[in-house]
Length: 67
Image 1 (cartoon, rainbow, N blue to C red):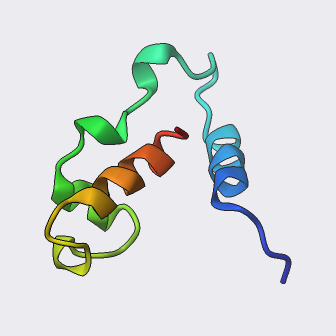
Image 2: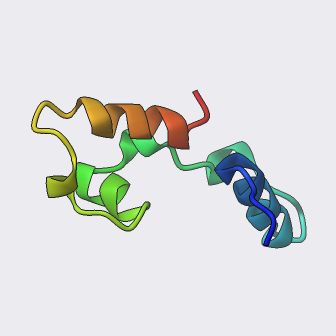
Image 3: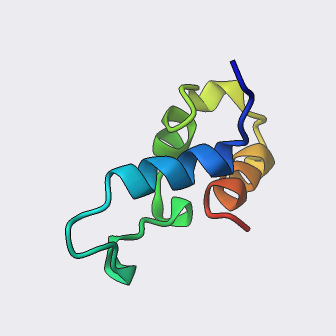
């Protein structure tokens, strides 16, 4: 099995699931608009798996948004 970066997997999934007329700007969901619980669940974790300060969740939001 070949290792792939998460960013490459996301690009492939988006390409494979693109609507017939393509993706539009309004289709994009920012992780910064998601709750802590939603962000944690997006990587199959719970909020309790992160630090109490919220720094790790903020960093994950940045990663998910490609920052």
